[in-house]
Length: 307
Image (cartoon, rainbow, N blue to C red):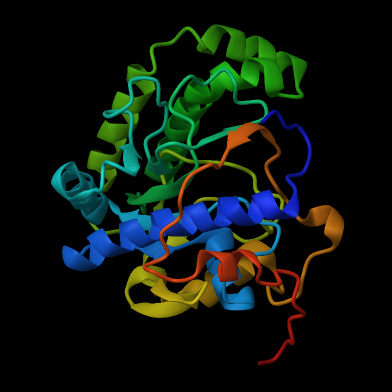
């Protein structure tokens, strides 16, 4: 199905439930093998404010520390239900260009508008971001940041060459897109090993950087860097009727990213990713629960603040 505009509500809800199905598989594997993960970003906000997906949200985000992430990738070689799911990394998909992972639902398609130049597998997915230490020394931290951002820009160049609004950046991307993706990926892998030699005050996802429209620029921890202490404690939180893990510093995290996060943003700031095309024609397994009942839930229910 070709699309360039907002998804119909029924399709969006099915997309969310496929993502929930994927999350349940991740949760199953992590609990079985004692691997720590957390809901993050808009998914965590949805759990706190809505008890599930933000009504207009079309993606699902998780985080892991580097050690747990590497264990998870290794365990998935034998534990993942490969009839239904695919763990996508640059090592498992030669066309994939990022240092974090996606878990995708086989038999689906979901291609975001503007990303047609990326030729990797494009099924419905959830993100698995990996957290690494950020150097405490100011000079080392600045070097770390510039190397990291330069590598990400190089990897993004295949999209930026046509999609960036800045003419001079498009010209820059025109040259960067010819750089073999393994060069920036290898550099970031070494950067992660170097930065993880000792525990530091802050962590970030080395392979991901984006100016989120919700992020408050005045917050020194964002975008990308967060106090390591946020992740010292974990707890379970309800999301769509299931229990998943969140990190102890979630309130500071959400406040820094979204401000007064319990209030709904104005409609013009309800950010979504318009798909170019998608196919959601697969069965959904919510641990035996009634999928039709989940599909019919009223996603626009009024939220009473202060509860």
